[in-house]
Length: 384
Image (cartoon, rainbow, N blue to C red):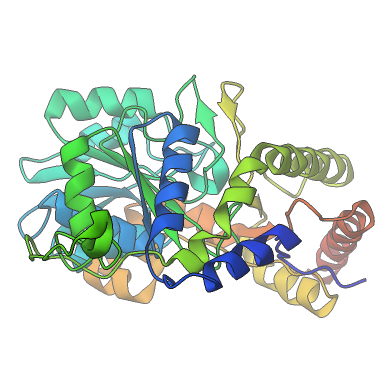
């Protein structure tokens, strides 16, 4: 039985929402997007939410709005998607990598503090796989040293830790609505913030630095001229994509509970079958969004298992390896620093892969994944 790595769960209501946008003159950013921004702000309990066309462009718009650029350092974890580091370099700043906690694979307060220099402007903690980083402790370090915190919450729309949700103690939290995310519009993202001035600057930097977008220039029954107030990028989300989001946001907790039940079943079943698989630690004080279900095996076995899983019709994949191990960043850092400076991230990245996890994954499909993986692990042991 083939089991794909991902299968979206968009409902018929989403198609109807797109049809309603098609019946209006505004396909780009307009009234639907503003309604979704209000919904997001209410969901997270913050005053400001701004839709973007990706996590990456939302992060670039945020960094530009904070005037982070050449001469500045931004601390990022070594275990994350490459975009977390790339956006820092793309605005001319310097990403400074830190190793991660061996149990949760996320930035630690100790690692953050040790990496701070007089040039440090900000840090970007990543809520990896759907579990939140220790934001309360990281915020204390940031406040002590006068640096900014920008959350990479691409995996953690529904998550919380120690009573905190994304955006509670940082300058901004940035989300992804990419095709495989828990809330999706194919390509998209959002930035939330408690800072009204920062929100207005991001509103400008997400649209070329302009003072007013197309929909705003015709509001209030009169024409409004626009001006360019700062350097910006093209990061706005069109209404035709924003229309896919409201129904998903309304049902996000139901889907999170389904993901959690599947993730717990994976752990229980696989732990009972084999001791060859390692899982990231789930903290008791966290609500986990379960964006991905990663496992770890001995690095020498990982690629053989992936090839055999693929041949068996199971859609497993390597989502992330240590960013310093990619060719570009390895050359940037130098091989000694890249290979020796981040032992936890490097080891995890060399042995990890992710199994299918989505709300409508059927029990028989999950059983197929579990039994196939167990069978292939045994076969791999016999081949060694």
